[in-house]
Length: 429
Ligand code: 0X9
Ligand code: ZN
Ligand code: ZN
Image (tube, rainbow, N blue to C red):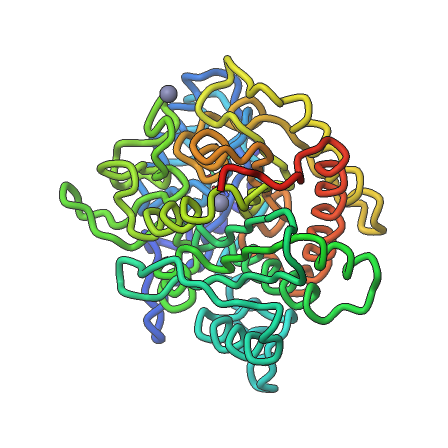
């Protein structure tokens, strides 16, 4: 009930409901605000989550054990206020105008695009990322190899790059941008690719050369293009539903591993965590499964890049009643990542633990599928910066700091894996 009264006054002048369409065909989020809502009981949580299923006026940005981040349309503020008073929870404003953040991000992108070169001072489009990948493949023909996961629902090619300096390296798979609006993930993945190829630093050279890297910078290509061209806040895939007018499935609930168990996903096609009509209903996820299965035995470590929250999440996602057999090792490896990141001058803190335990039950996610069905014993979801100040619209000046943290964190993670014996070549090929 900690709603700022200045904001209450402000909302009276804004009457429009829902996001409006801008001249450029993009959805606008003028005066949409984002609140952190703290809850205590399961009942409060479910009332708040129901609000989010409305979608027009309330959208779920993030959920944790004891709080939800909800984006509120200006016209629905009174309803929100009534609802939080009724459920007796407290709400704190942390973004007052989502469009303002989108505008400044867009301005930066346009400015950086004008000088033509690919870089990490802005967020790149899918076309820019793919054109850059082509340049990289031409410039480093011996150590890089292009691979194709398959085609998206809308017919786009899902591309990856393998970087291998020598034979018999352990394999690390990086899946990035499965959630469309999490732009920091593809920015970080492409920066890592660039470092692995161009850095002259011994620390980076060791990391690059002693592992085989399989990197998919943008898995949810349709959703990603949609966030650039239509709706910055889109999360899911773009395949229409047969039972609803709502579009898309949460691809991180669509893998065939404990699919839809224990409330780990929604069966409502309008929900942000809709699991789909059946496992692998999304061609992007089927493609990922086919490709990873085809190189099974080569992958020692699976890292799925997400944002935001600064978390390292290990299996299980489908239950918090049980923990995987090597859970102690998974914690030790996660701690190595967290300690390394924290030791950088930025002082960024990561928390870690099992997904279901420290976040919420989520079934059918990449890292759980890789762990449960593909025998990848070291398997994490990494939630990058920040903890909510900017959320998904992380300012471009934070791309490189975030990517540096990823680099140092992943290096420490792999060192710990090596020490614990997880980087030995697998024989199950
Ligand atoms: O909910 C998700 O899919 C991830 N969070 S996000 O805010 N990026 O959407 C976290 C998934 C963690 N759970 C499992 N891996 N099971
Ligand atoms: Zn099960
Ligand atoms: Zn995500």
